[in-house]
Image 1 (cartoon, rainbow, N blue to C red):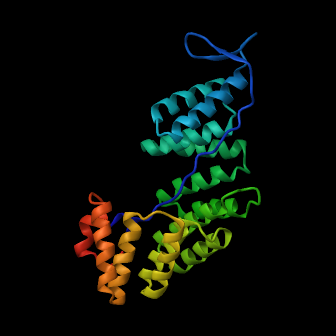
Image 2 (image 1 turned 180 degrees about the vertical axis):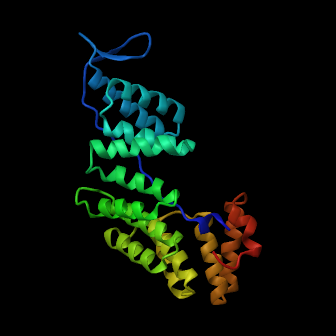
Length: 260
């Protein structure tokens, strides 16, 4: 099975807007106010540092800052949500689940956390719980990226498999953001699975206007064009896949690929 066939869920780190505070650092790196320690502000700043490090994939530094933040103030939802994301990356599932739940206890309206927790739950075969969170996030008028939650909901249903439900969610994602590349590539794969090759080609063409080529989308193109009988176009996709992603699983499996 190729990487594309396994499908990908999308998690996004929250962004904490830390309040400005006049600070100094002691020899141990602890952040404090000029007059006396202000642990609440220090916790916010350490949380922001943890998020920044996590965005840069410097997970050890991120974990250190977030653990310190929670020691300083255990009631920061963003610290719990981000450390949960890191624990999930490490495979420490019990801790990830614990911190996601605590983040939502502290801020039940945080749709970014709902999306990320849904990603975690879907990856652990808890699809019904995940779908509830994805749909809640997508319905939140204050959530800036409902297309992300809706695409995740579709991916989770596709894994079930519930292709009709997946298509409904992917189309809702595209209604929210017609140029959302992840939803377009998912619809291309879904259309190919349903043997609707012309529709797969159309969604792939839309994807090409929205995002850069990936091993997955080049494989979609190769398989779709083979199915449509356009061997020239199929070969062009195959050559690009082998040239641009020579180490990918898609490239290695391409000669034997007949379905996603």
